[in-house]
Length: 432
Ligand code: NDP
Image 1: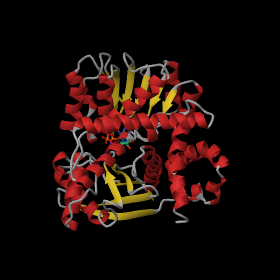
Image 2: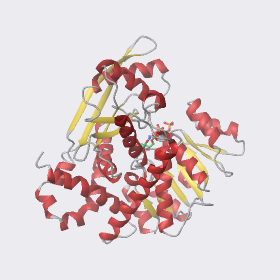
Image 3: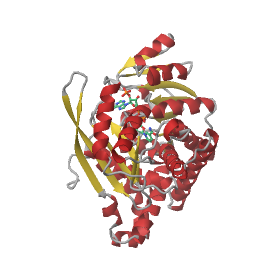
């Protein structure tokens, strides 16, 4: 805490991981001797830079850009770029730290990193977003590369932003290579990348429920968020027979007792870039609430898919009281430590984001493979690989939890399974 002042999210993420690694460290003194934990909690490198751009009124605006290259023991740094006013170095360190374990869990050769800016894309014109992205990449390009660091999207960074970033990199370096993932299908993107995190979350949840004699079929589901992860989580949940009754954004949330109309959500969010308050015009029987409160809706399964610390202890109590039996994180660290422990103490199956939302980065790694081979796989091929990766992640987390004496604790299981591969690679590579 003294070494990382004013970084509560980073401290929270590290506390959760280190607590669950205690049995592994006790049984493997070589990790302690080699300072693995000290090295794992200090990023390899943190870059911070000025991003100056010109708005539509002709004024120069200045934002802060960052890239945290956390750990590359098992592959090039890989992790998203976030554009949101709340972005600061502590948030990016928490996300980069989580990414190291998540990427290891995928079984693919990718290290962990994260980046972004406090730029707010909301309300900006396309030209302003492009001006920002070009300026951001003008600095970032010297720190990334197809075998060094391959960023992707995250909150506020979708296909449009990735396109502008890629175009600027290509222009500056005169090089056409896979330096970003989440690209458009006409210039090196992978089919199924857009759907991957949401679909993957449901493949993981389905595997977890089946192992515990339950299923998604016929269950009531609360989803928070209405961005990339939430939309495709909703789609796959519906395909698997679940009934999704809520979604939210940063200004409010909707309840639709008949089940969310995903076509309407996609039109509002993906086409019009609008607000959820517009949903009522499509579904007059739905209810729109201003502010927070999505977790007050009774459900069987809760899928937090918006942002960090959006599900706190009082929400957990309400959900348990209303009979929730599974919670699976689509967002990164949406559930506070207290709330997570409350779920586990009350027998709720809990899937931690670093395992259950790993489908996005796994498919990004598949995009990197396709770029290196200069070919592209079909949607079905990528989707089948994604499903099998998610099922493997569940099995590995579940087996590790059993091996270390805490069956069904998938938080501990995922942390241990992700840690061991990275720690062994660090041991083998010496003191660096
Ligand atoms: P999007 O920007 O597409 O959507 C984010 C959603 O969350 C929006 O509905 C947004 O509402 C809401 N939201 C964002 N910040 C806040 C906030 N501070 N308070 C309340 N609501 C908020 O992002 P993604 O769907 O890509 O990401 C969502 C989460 O999933 C993040 O935690 C991200 O790190 C994680 N994730 C994403 C992956 C991906 O492949 N995209 C992969 C793995 C994890 P509004 O529209 O009002 O801003």
